[in-house]
Amino acid sequence: MEKVALVTGSSSGIGYETVLALAKDGYQTFASMRDTSKAGELKKIIESENLPISILELDVDNDDSIVTAIKKIMLDKNRLDVLVNNAGYGQFGCTEDVTIDEFRKQFETNFFSVVKIIQEVSPIMRKQGSGAIVNISSVAGRMGFPGSPAYISSKFALEGLCECLRYELGMFGIRTTLIEPGVVKTNFFDSMKIPESKKDPKYKQITENILAGLKMMVEMGTSPAQVAEVVIKALHDKEMLPRYLVGTDAAMFMEAKRSKSDLEFEKYMSKELFPA
Ligand SMILES: NC(=O)c1ccc[n+]([C@@H]2O[C@H](COP(=O)([O-])OP(=O)(O)OC[C@H]3O[C@@H](n4cnc5c(N)ncnc54)[C@H](OP(=O)(O)O)[C@@H]3O)[C@@H](O)[C@H]2O)c1
Image (cartoon, rainbow, N blue to C red; front, side, top):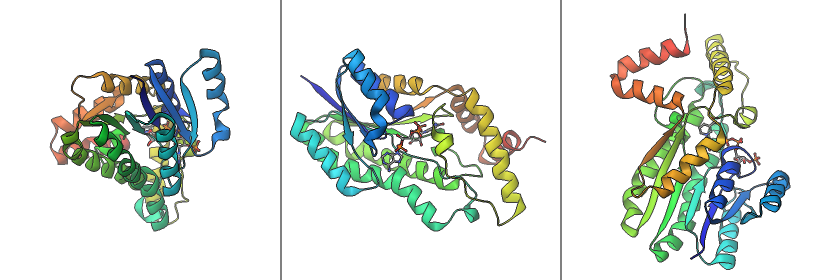
């Protein structure tokens, strides 16, 4: 039987690579993006490699766009086996430097959109008695640090949601998981929204330190294709795990978190983030 997959935010990075990996793994894959004029590169590969990929318009910030996209998939294929919630961006800046609207917008794209898509997709998967929902979270969804609380808390929310869904949707044979990469070499850092830090020089110093650290880490970052490989591995696992870490940086930070008390971990992170 034909298996059907949908990926959000497929115009670049992890979404783009996940679309290719799913298609190569045999899925009829819908590569969704809010601006389909960005599909040029993907279209060339689809043609040259004859891959089963369809480009689909989907702006995750727009509920109507979500409903329309899912309807199109159902009209065309009448099933949906895999949903990869990938679309997202990073709102940078310390809490006082980020406006409440910027916080809300971050949650709209990184969290509420996921709730809305799952509300549309889970009735289909419940009816089928099967399906898998893969949520691209981050190791930043497991630990807080200064400089990007809006992004971090949106990923914490996603982690909480997914832990609940493991029970709620698991009852119907729907598998859910979280993918938790460390730093991945994508457009993410160019698209990051960075507010001007005006409230206090200390906030400015912190954000500059973190940005400089991130720049260095990006050079050694995981490739988006490696993240896509982990998505495929999760789908193939007989028992899908609640979460999959990706990258040596993510593994190192999580190992430190697991092995230390909360206070020890804060001290460790402070030393990592603000070396003397
Ligand atoms: N890169 C990292 O270090 C890293 C680490 C951990 C987790 N992640 C997560 O990985 C996911 C993918 O990011 P990436 O690293 O691959 O960065 P990316 O190359 O910037 O890709 C982000 C994708 O999300 C899309 N997007 C943003 N807002 C959208 C909206 N309203 N509707 C539909 N699509 C939207 C972007 O579309 P446009 O091209 O239209 O902007 C783009 O396709 C994100 O959820 C991010 O939080 C990234």
